[in-house]
Length: 299
Image (cartoon, rainbow, N blue to C red; front, side, top):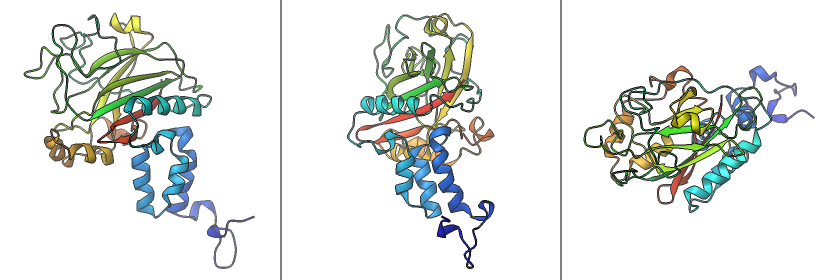
């Protein structure tokens, strides 16, 4: 039976190519789960702008998008990552773009190597390890990254993932002035049976010239990572503007408000090639309870 929404005044069915933006967006929603390309917050905003009911978006979003705002970041991340890994584990997906590691990787490629330090393999990366135990302040953020084979969609268990990002002031440990002796907001973990690693961290700043982001490298296994062996994939996670705005309105992130206003995903030196479409995290949570950023990547 023809849907009356897609018929003309004479009752004839309108060709799909001429049904307009609302039809296109609704079609995109149904494909979202397989593609995993939009964050839940960003998708809701797109739908609202097009006049499409957010009920449809809620139904299509990952389970994390409807998680309770009072849920702990770790619990939300676990549920999100597991559901995401299961949902598309049997379907091929696009390979995440290769990106620069930037000037502050501390992976032995730019003056510093933290990967061979005892203590780098850890889940909670908020504090330094070794000689210092300083903790980076900021809005809590759990980062759940799921690694899959792009050709098959199969979860890649046992891979090593090195992840790092800037602090609330936009500075990088081991490099930036005043924190050269800190190594917080850096860590290595092994992907689980679902291909997922989950890091406990804080929300990074937006510093001048870049869109808010998180760096990561994927290795064949943890042993290869800590030996600074061959890298399988180097890329970055983009954080969606709607969540950035909420976090940057809190104390300590004042500089980020101005910096983000001066850039965009479409102008960013890393994400502009496909507007971050394969790298935008799906977000859940709140400023008070902390956020979870989830992303599935194909390698």
